Amino acid sequence: VQLVESGGGLVQAGGSLGLSCAASGSIFSVISMGWYLLAPGKQRELVATTNSGGSTTYADSVKGRFTISRDNVMNTVYLQMNTLKPEDSAVYYCNAYIYTSTTAWSDYWGQGTQVTVSS
Image (cartoon, rainbow, N blue to C red):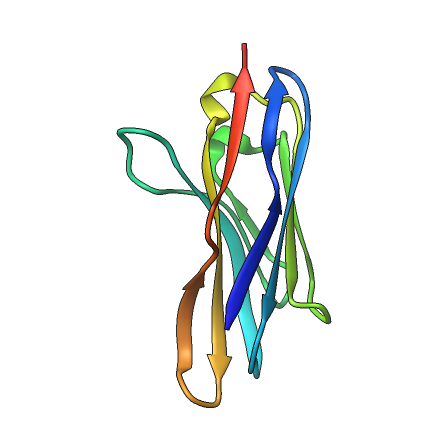
């Protein structure tokens, strides 16, 4: 299984960016997909997650600014980030909890994509 991320980059404060992450491989089922961030000197933090039923969870710091969505057919998760702040700068990682015929339920991670917000 692979998670391939795209999007990210450099934007000015107040701007918007979109991230996407596609899961591929011998996937039987994807129960949840989401995004985490890792900022310098900090631990990895949850940004947002969504499950196969459409329920979503957001970190308090991004509520009202970020929107997570998912294409269950394409096993792809998106993160629309609006009104970005310099403190949103981090490496963003895609995460998925996937069932395969060989590994059963396992956590998978993307390679990470840098988001930099300039003030």
